[in-house]
Structure formats: C-alpha cells, structure tokens
Amino acid sequence: MDAGGRPSTGQVILLATSSAVTAILYAIYRQKSKAAHSLKGARKVTLDQDLKSILMEAPGKCVPYAVIEGVVRSVKETLNSQFVENCKGVIQRLTLQEHKMVWNRTTHLWNDYEKIIHQRTNTVPFDLVPQEGKTDVALRVLKPLDATELSLETVYEKFHPSVQSFTDVIGHYISGERPKGIQETEEMLKVGAVLTGVGELVLDDRTIRLQPPKQGMRYYLSSLDFDSLLQKQESSVRLWKILTVVFSFATCALFLFLLHRQYRHYREKQHLRQMSEMSGAGGDAASNACVICLSNSRSCVFLECGHVCSCDKCYQALPRPPKCPICRQEITRVVPLYNS
Image (cartoon, rainbow, N blue to C red):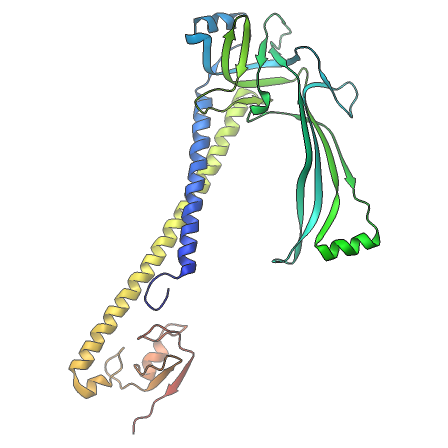
C-alpha cells in the first residue's frame, strides 16, 4: 500500500488478474458441466431393425440427442495407409511437426518448442453397422471431423533428426534456436473399428443419419464405450470445478487481506490524529511527548523522512521493518536528538 493507505498498482493488478482467471475457469467449468449433463441425458438406442421404427415414431423422424454404437464400414472406397501395408481406413490424418529448442532470455534456459508445419486430413463416407455382422442396417455418419472426441489410431510415427554442421551449430546458438528434427505421424480411423457415436439421429427417406446435434450440444465419435466416455467427461468437470474453487478462495483471501490492511492503516491514522489533538491541547510539555507512549520525550530523528515523533524505547518496539508513525515511510536510519 502507498502512504495514503490505498492498494498499490501491483496489488490491484494481481487482484484483477486473479478475478479474471476465476471468471474464465468458472465459464469453462459451466460449459463442461453442461456438456456432461447433456451426455448423461442422451437417449441410448441400438443399431438394429427396430431403429427405423423408433425414428418413424419420433417427432420429425428425429432423436435430438442419442447414443449408438457400431462398427466402421466404408461406403464405397477406402483410404490406404502410406506407410503400413494392408491398413485401410475412412479417415486419414498426416502430420509433420517441427521440434526445436528455443533460448529463453528471461530464464536463461533452453525450452522445447513444437510446431505443426503441415497437416492434411483425408476422409471418405462411412457407415456404422451392427457389431454382430448384420449388414442390412447401416447408419451414415456425417461431418465426422466436427466431433469432439474423434478417436484416431496412430499407425505410423517416425522422428527425423536434423543433420547439422559445425557452422550450423554456431549459427543456431547465436540465433537462439536449435532445430532437433521433424516428426512424421499418420493417424487413421480403421475399417472395423468400434465407435460410440453421440449426436442427432435423423431418418431421411430410407437412410439413417448421425450428424452434429443442435442447441450447442457436443458431437462425439469415440472408441470408448458410453460409460467410459461419460466417466471421462465427469472427471474433467470435477477437475475444472476444483480449479475454480481454488482460485475463488485465493481471490477472496487476497481481497480480504487488502481490505484488512487498508482498515489497519485507517485505524492507525485515526489514532495518530487523536494523539496529535491531545498533544496540542496539553501545552508545550505535551507537544514534546512521544506520540506512541505519550509519556517520554521525543528523542530520535527518523531518516529519511525527518520526523521527530518518538522516544528511543518506542522506536525499539516498532515492528520490523520499522516505519514512521506519522508518514508510514520506512525508517532507514535513526539519529539521537539531544535537547539543551
């Protein structure tokens, strides 16, 4: 706090930052809690012959939020892996990621840095069919890349280290960046993989479609079963709830601490004002009395502020680091005062 008892700029910035972080964490917690609650209330349906009957009876031939499991089957053609033989899928993602070390001028340490320099995703239309092998019922999956939990399996991964000459090494140290290499990765959603889909079910003519739901609910295509998927989302909700509570308590504690310090400063200021009034009413003898004990004579000069307001005994009893009772400036040196 400054001499006027107001919080310092740093304390105000710290309180504002803590409040903003708490608000952001609470917003994320509310969003994840809403998603978990919607997922818990989703309607479970089975991919069988009765699915069309259920959709025919539903309003608008639509189930707004449903859970269904099935096996991936391509509609026409499949995607072949570029690196693994006899590996076929319906979604393929190729990624090139740069790895390097970057010099941090603040901490004076080398930090790992990763950056995706190229990524390409290929898709083909695919269905979900019953796990028992019956192919007369199929569920067309639309917009799979919009899914929150799109489970892709890593089928190939290789790290290509960078080859550097001595001149390159010197140049990298001077520039503050040391390349480590390029990581090449291929991920695929294989044909025959078991998926749990959560979204909107719609019957269009004779085709059953699974598509992203409306009203802000999340779209899932996960390799986990429904119970595991729900448990994962609820664990995430608990984590964000704990973070929100911790930062809320920290913000409240900081606010109460600043408020308490301001109140103490106000009380001290009121006490000094009363002492000054009593000193002025008591005459010359009282005007020379210590403002703390009001009995001994003032016998020391506080530097650098220059106030003469305390006896040596009361100065020794001041909390450390000592501050002037008049202006609250920190006392760096004390000079004895001798009255002739």
